[in-house]
Image (tube, rainbow, N blue to C red):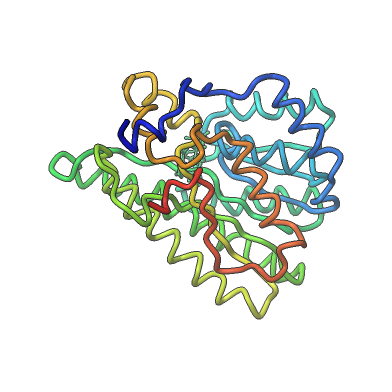
Length: 285
Ligand SMILES: NC(=O)c1ccc[n+]([C@@H]2O[C@H](COP(=O)([O-])OP(=O)(O)OC[C@H]3O[C@@H](n4cnc5c(N)ncnc54)[C@H](O)[C@@H]3O)[C@@H](O)[C@H]2O)c1
């Protein structure tokens, strides 16, 4: 038996959590209330990680204001929250790459809740293409979708976090910020995520005197709107992904949302300029 065969799971794990698992997550979060009284702005709540974090934060007691480019997707998240009686609202369609959009989002949260404590930048867009097939236009669109929208939202939130006496910013880097992945045409994504990682360290430096903490999560492969199409198109992808996981399953939005809860809570008051790998061990070997 080869070592990789020894590490392979006997049965391919499910891609999605069960209804019971989701219900248990929701019940635990509602019981914990680790973000009670906080006002959180979360971008990209129409899908994947942003949706998972928005629901988790609302269950943890935060008032959440989200946004998305996709109005129907945002409406579905807001409806899911309302079914649970959670405080979650949002603006859509809102294109965060357009100057002024982030200011509208933050202004809505401040007007509705008197200030903000948390900003989570989960919205992102990127074109995946190998270097010789990446047009300059797609390169620029990708960097706007990976970097500009994070910068613009941080800039818009900053004076309100300063006025509040501090707060937490959470951005998303990636395993791709650290390592090249075989078979992944991720040149713009790598550049964008490396930029987010470096930008967030600098935000932490500038935020320190104001009590503003800034951290990143670098997720491994999480099943979301962004990745599901790829999984459907490439039947071997899931096995390739699992080969790099020490814990032999793909990630769920809830895996990221638990880490996000810690990083945005008062329990993380001495955690800043940090990057948290939440990736089933993929980055360590
Ligand atoms: N899913 C993964 O495996 C994975 C791995 C590493 C890093 N990440 C990062 O985590 C974050 C969330 O990823 P995801 O997989 O949940 O993405 P996703 O594509 O499923 O969801 C992103 C959401 O952002 C919205 N959005 C995109 N551009 C926008 C814009 N200009 N203005 C407003 N909204 C916009 C989309 O409509 C979508 O609803 C991203 O930064 C992503 O790069 C994801």
